[in-house]
Length: 285
Image 1 (tube, rainbow, N blue to C red):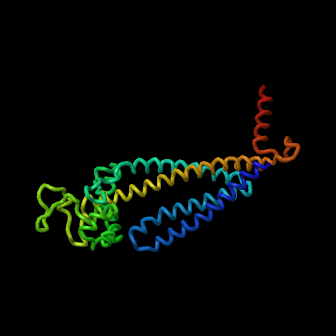
Image 2 (cartoon, rainbow, N blue to C red):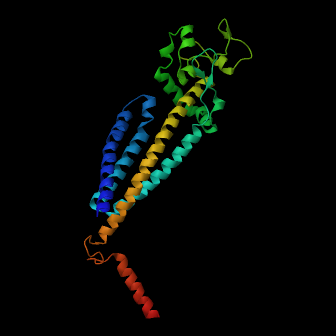
């Protein structure tokens, strides 16, 4: 009896917490939907989908655990299993994609520089496609990352660090040499793409694309680590949910939890099916 109450109570409270947690997710998605900023609006669909899925799954699990509704718990466990499988696949994919990168040290400088060939083929193909790069470039320009270092002196570049986007998009590669504002021969292609115009800079450089990929790689790595924690949490909830489902099935069968556990007021549907099958078999033999 104690185990019965414990598993159902735990599932009920956990799903109540996740039900409340889905509200800020949905609210954040709706708030981002009103934003005109490219970087923010691109997040609205994942947030809304995640919020509504968590809301529906938590509501189903809460009702099933608190009211011993077996079919609701069965649906809850099925969706939970699909979520665990999807999250596991996403985590493995995230670790695979987040491999490589990290940048190269620049002698005498604090910051690092980044190169496209250091990243996974999938990321390189995505960032070099015109439609994806247009959106990413608009995001970089809108973030005003380059405006923050526009007044830096040469001494600042020697002593201060740069973000991946600032290192790749706001300046030419450190190895570039110029004469009268023109790049010398036999240099990196990015040296020729660089322009001192604030609207051009190195936004068309491969180093800028690599800087964006480095930022994506770092974010995906953090997300993958978080996914591992969430996976452990979901698997624990799933195990407790299985106990609650078994208790709900037992409650539907109306087994009394008193001294006499062998009697039941109303047999389950399978009792009649097996009785019918036994009668047919006895008639045949």
